[in-house]
Length: 263
Image (cartoon, rainbow, N blue to C red; front, top):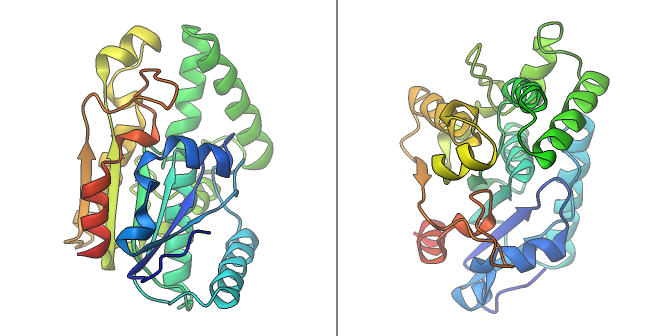
């Protein structure tokens, strides 16, 4: 927790699946001196999750309430974001907080290259394993298949469970977990670098998180949202170690984010 001397807003961030708070501090370069802009930042170590159970939503909500109360943070202008699976968590939690009329009522939520559709993620994992293009993609694919079949089931057998766990499902246009988000600001960040994806993963646009996010963005527009943005970046996907990778915190542009939060 880094408290701004003159708090104008609070930004809560969730890491990617295997990541932690230190990773967020290293990779999310836009965090530098945000407190001097009046933005209090709270980095959470809630990881190893692509979805939340109802109990987990309540537990995290209670944890946040305690942090706000114990540190005398203002319950105003609260924004939630997350990278990769952390974006899934951010969207699910933001919808829950609004639905339950929690003291922590987010004004906005954003996801950074997040796999919002778990059914599509499962099917993509199957494809990556079958194609066997890159060992990282195969290992991740096998992990996702095993995890989902164990904890949720197969999509063709347990589609209602996938609806309950996903921010959005393209196949049936399920918006169960976005019902309250059309009332607040939402941002979807992605860098659909098709040259990199084809060369390194042999994926086309519909295989990417960017496609899932575009469909969720379109769903919010259909639901009447006038404050939703799909931000597609170019050549920003560079990790802290200098590696070129479109799946990166760095696609978030600092000045634009600050303006979005404080405007």
